[in-house]
Image (cartoon, rainbow, N blue to C red; front, side, top):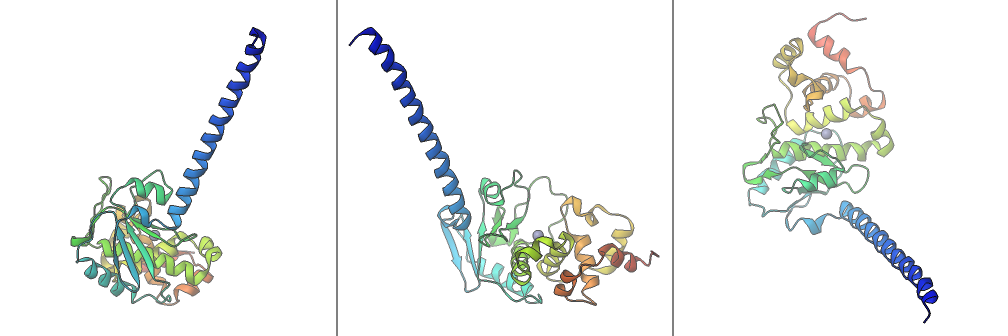
Length: 256
Ligand SMILES: [Zn+2]
């Protein structure tokens, strides 16, 4: 083999090597995308433990204690006062590994309580929890009491979102304002109405717990409960009114 021939063969080998490397990288990226998409629809391989009931299947990446039954019974009790038809059975995944919250929530933050995949598979993902105590482990940044938000609240809140999307359809759900979707989910999730006197006082003082930008839906819940006295959730969704007017009426403030 002449020196010239060797010189011609070297770039050919290099090109082939680059092509193989590019092909390998593309195949790896494609496999990662397909795996992530498959896990979004069917996350079970990442959750070794499950506790099955007819309407709610609870999954976790840690062993599930028998107290799970009491948690799920409390979820059912909260959902009973919803006007929306049950859309279950539901799969609820407790993500004790918080990177799963990032992955399934498709969110750079994992400081949320729970999330439901309303537009795709209808799976529910909840942050690290102590099922035995019916409690979530809140992130350090949360400011408000969890006294009225046990684990069963978070599960019932997310199931209500799935009931909302089932009743409204995906497009109407997407168009419905957040105050109504979140306020109704909190109205059902909390399991009882807000104390009007305490809430009105907090509104008047512009207390931080009445500001949804602080990550709590008390303001939305109060507005929804005031509006539900005259209309159903479906009527409110068909023609959403101004929630601030309802709150002003409660405070007896004149408005135009
Ligand atoms: Zn919500």
